[in-house]
Amino acid sequence: MPEVLKAPLVVEFPFTRSVGPVQSAFLTGLRERVVLGVRTADGRVLVPPVEYDPVTAEEIHDLVEAAPTGTVTTWAWNHAPRRGQPLTTPFAWVLVRLDGADTALLHALDAPGPDAVHTGMRVRIRWAEERTGAITDIACFEPYDGAAAELTGRTGAFEEAVSGIVAPARLDYTYSPGRAQTAYINALADRRNVGERCPSCRKVYVPPRGACPTCGVATAEQVEVGPGGTVTTFCIVNIKAKNLDIEVPYVYAHIALDGADLALHGRIGGIPYDQVRMGLRVEPVWTQGGRYPDHYRPTGEPDADYDQYKELL
Picture 1: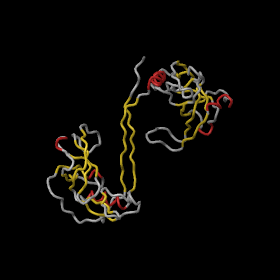
Picture 2: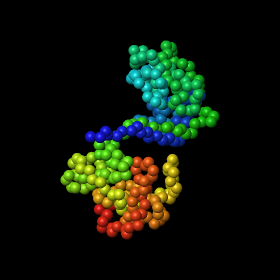
Picture 3: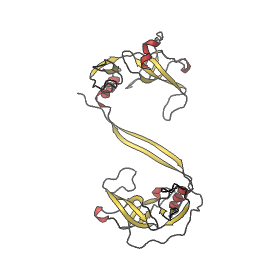
Picture 4: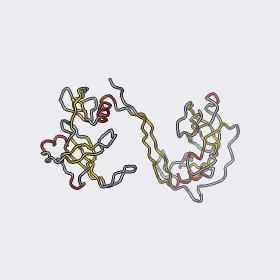
């Protein structure tokens, strides 16, 4: 059996959000090396602060300063830090109840090894040299042998308060299309469309899935389909996608290749976008060195009758 394909993939986007008055004060305080919590109606001080009481759901906005020193309530050792984590060398994830607070804050503890960490140990904040109003303004915690640090007396009143944050979201993973789609991708490199036939219902699926979605049985019999096909449904795209060098408007369509029982999608070219229609007969257009069709264009054949493709809508 040929080797199954795999490739590293990254999904990444910046998540931009505004912050309310409580979170604004908390983040701006970090920029100024001040930790602010919020006091609930029953007198508890929550750090990090929230805008609504987790017990009563009432809005809370009474800001209270907590000390940059505290006590570890629980921890876990991270022996292999990943990209984007607070420290590049092994460290402990810790929950720290800051002096003056009733809840714990999650962050990293810089320690020489797991034997140097224990519940109840005293720690203090190590501030980042450059601070912008984000949780990363706390570079990490570090061991501290002393009493609670003195408070600054600051409240939530700051100049140039933080009003929003940008949180980059990223997922790194290795994707494998599996046996069936590996064969499909390899065939595309030879400018062929190859699907698989279900041994029970005899339907041909392109791209193949390795199993029939209707019968649930494994598929293995390969069937070459196309290259021509029929537009079953389509949409007109009017918003230009980032990093996609295609002028709008353009048409993206579901195309039922001849001999297939499942429509795949592809871009339609070689025809004005407002002339694309259901039943249009199309064929693939390959670019030099391309591993898949760049787009599909009209063949010039008469449109397919609706009854020929209605089951594939």
